[in-house]
Length: 106
Image (cartoon, rainbow, N blue to C red; front, side):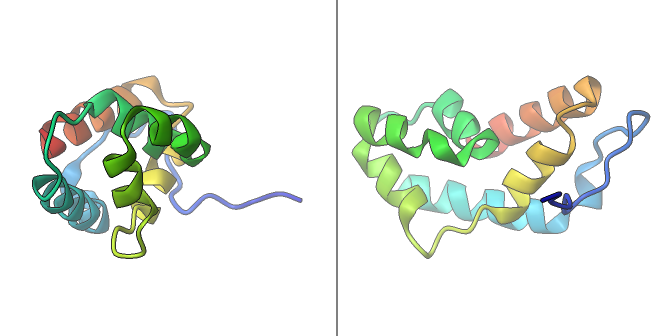
């Protein structure tokens, strides 16, 4: 069955944060959640999870507190994940978006 993407990102589109306010809201929630977890947070692990939510099993082994945060009902990442999925064929957009997420959670 074909699954529709939440965002329609064309190969000519460029990432502009202001076009995605719900992504920013979710990013702010992640940053607030991370502030409550002691220790080092790997941005690479978080981005890997957002790109592929099935990565949670690996996340559990490397950082259980982080896995708990992303497994909780209070942390919604639907828009972040959908945008990663929707822009996967536009390398420029993907690169800019990933950098934006990195800065947003660091």
